[in-house]
Length: 233
Figure 1 (tube, rainbow, N blue to C red):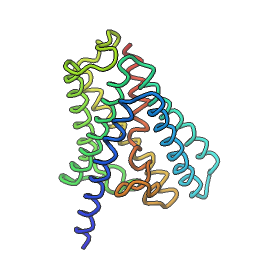
Figure 2 (tube, one colour):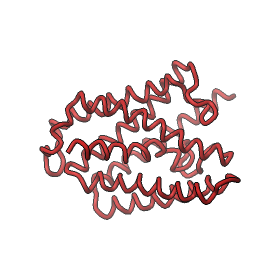
Figure 3 (cartoon, one colour):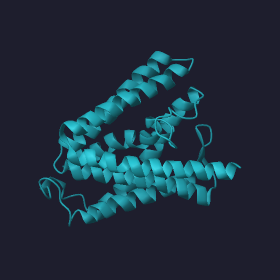
Figure 4 (cartoon, rainbow, N blue to C red):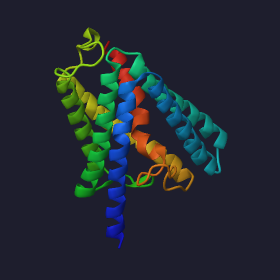
């Protein structure tokens, strides 16, 4: 019975992802006010869900509400700056998005297949060290692949000289780092869910839970990726 429920849950997750991903990519490519409207809506929903988790805990509510507000503001601000503040912003955002999706998928299936020692059993009992390795590997592989394809598909202003340092080996190593960072971001939201005794941050997305459950990795990856890119300019 449990096996059937798991298969149904996985199917729902896949369907939700296949519906949402093209919509998100379309709005990112479209840019302008449509992109900003999507980001603003996502920010407000994420803020609402985070405040619900922080308020659900009994201690240090105000402190965690403030920390959450700052964290989400930095994360979403970095996402917007990546899109509009850097040369090839469209390519950079898409590269980050597909790499994070590959990381999350790789972590899930690697962890399920290999199993092994738990990464953080108190915060997230299902996460394993094998899953962390899968997240790093697939994120690095995808980011390197996108960098390779960049030679053939250019956006907006073409190849920007200021990012000539972003070689395929460099992006591979950066992807490894971002894969690990994404898992930390996932665990950070898991910490708040654990404090609030909640399984999910919400129920907005079928099969995934709340919006925070879907973008938890991306929230921390965005400012870290932006920082790396600014250092490479």
